Image (tube, rainbow, N blue to C red; front, side, top):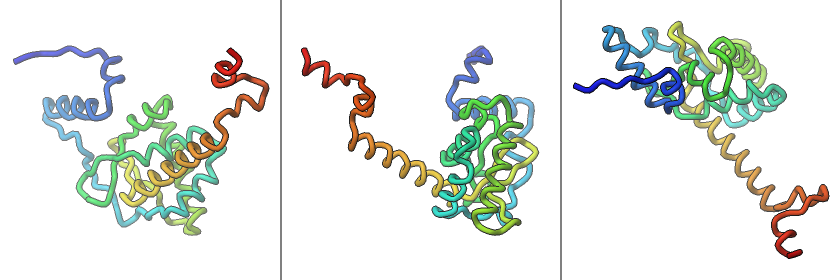
Length: 183
């Protein structure tokens, strides 16, 4: 048997998969499951379509932490019980978005839920659900639509950079190509 000691900084810096594995191992050593005790109520989660995802983004785009949390939900989550539901740990979202704690993530999710409700025109529609164990649940199709929106935005950004490769030159700054030509 081999024992390993990790500092809290090492654990925090570890990739999410490693942190989840450590969590499962620690919880198993105490005889407790690391998966959520409550199953998410998938019937209450609405699917956020491509158009609704764009509408949600348009409503939240002025609040950067909320936008960060929104796009964090485009990552692949874990599947707990129900195959069409993605699960995310609130602490992982907080870590990836550099928010101080899970309460800040929940506040951002509340804003996203409200924006989604506005976008789909249904005050009872829920973009995401939370459990008492610190997990956020969204529909798998919602996760995929957020990911596609992110990819579309990145493609637009790359296209605009290709069309105007030297935006700094417009402000009187020399580019590397300009400096090479002058030499």
